[in-house]
Image (cartoon, rainbow, N blue to C red):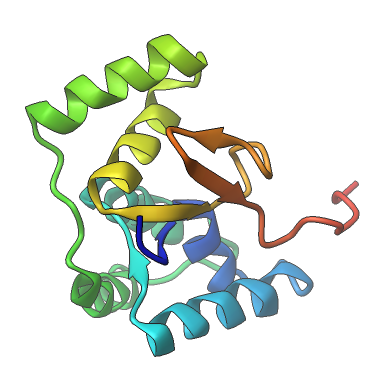
Length: 145
């Protein structure tokens, strides 16, 4: 395993979400570190989710052009394409760990990308899936009411 870190959609979204004044700087700082270290990884699935949620669910949302600019920049991380091998591995992840399908795809993509960690708020902080450890960049924060 390398020091590569797979970034889940929620971290990307928080980095652009001005309605989350505590999480936004934490997410931005972590992404900046990954850019500097050149260790960030993601998948086409993450970029798809990012585009939809950044343009439809953020308040205020990004314009499609702004979201696309982010995606073009993130393409430098060579997003993993989903293929039958990834889908098959995701099925194995789901069967073994009882994760949702979408989270199983994240774990499978992280593994295929040679990541040692997954940066995510959605998966359980500290959990290990096939040796890949989940890190919640917002751990210790109080939940929003």
